[in-house]
Amino acid sequence: MEAFKTHTGIVAPLDRANIDTDAIIPKQFLKRIEKSGYGQYLFYDWRYNDHEEENPDFLLNREPYRSASVLLTRENFGCGSSREHAPWAIEDFGFRAVIAPSFADIFYNNCFKNGILPLRLPAEDVQQLFEKAASIPGYQLTVNLEENVLTDGQGFEREFEVDEYRREMLLKGLDEISSTIQHEAEITDFEQNHKIHYSL
Figure 1 (cartoon, rainbow, N blue to C red):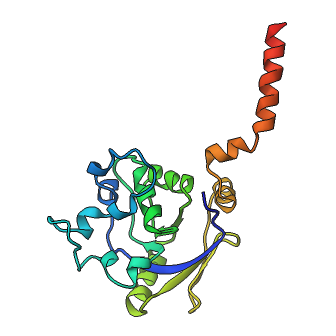
Figure 2: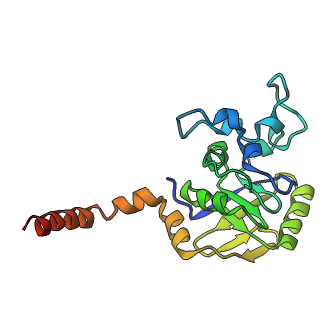
Figure 3: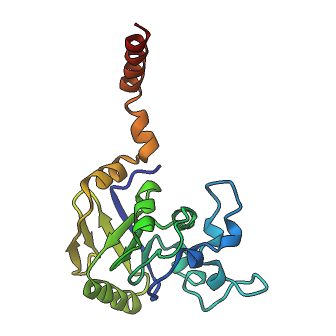
C-alpha cells in the first residue's frame, strides 16, 4: 500500500449527499475476484448511459476532473452496504483523499485499509471548498498528513484530526496484514515457545 504523507491534487466537487456504496460501485461488478481494475466502474451509473457511452454532463467525464485525486462531497458519504469494493474503486480511479462533513462508519474504516484518507471537515468548510472549486479552474488542495493540515495556497488552511493509529498506518503505507508481518519474528518466537511449553 502506498504511503500517504503529503498529497496535492485537483479537487473533484461531487455535490451530492448520502452517496451510497451501490452508487460508488454497482453490484454487478462485485463478482470480479481481483482487487484492482475497479476504477473504470466508479460511479458507473452516473458516468455512462444505457449504451455504455460516457455521460458528458457527469463531473469525472470532463477536464480537468478526469485526473482529479481529491474528491469533495457532502455528508454521509459511503452509506449503504459494507462492500470494500467501494474504496477499491475510489483508489483505483486515482483518488488519494475524500473530503466530506461525515462518512458511513464501515466505509470510513475501509478507506484507511486501502490507502485513502477520508477527511472530515465541518459543513461550513466543505461549503467554502465547493465555492472555491466552482470559481477556480483546476482548483487544487494539499493534504499534509504529517502536520494534519489542509491548504490550498490561496488562503484556505484548516487543521484536521485523524486517529493516531490510523494516521501512523497511512504514513507508513501499512494495512493490518502488513503491520502484523512487521512482528513476524516475535510471532514466530511466541509460537515456538508455546509449542515447547505445551509439549512438556
